[in-house]
Image 1: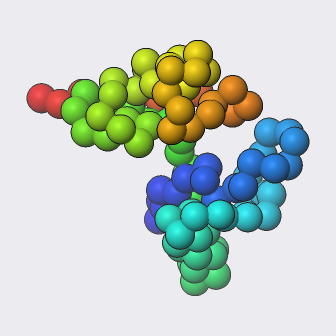
Image 2: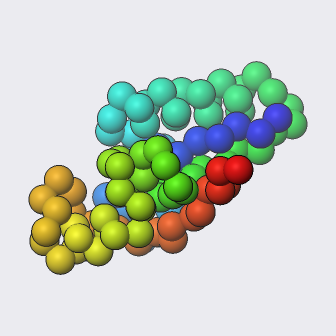
Length: 101
């Protein structure tokens, strides 16, 4: 089984990049539900993969939490033009999703 999860199962306070074996510390309800699902996958199955994704973007739909292209919002946040979130201390690599059509 392949379970798709999120990097949000970590709270971001570790001070170094996270490893797959680090203990999840979810902050949001969404992250708590993903951490719970990971727990059940690990507990109930013998053969599985848990894939944690972050910063997915594609044409159409939500990207980085809004209707942007997914490439401009991080730059706007760091430049101070988007006050909804601060990305200056976050390290990630945006990952393209499938193109429609």
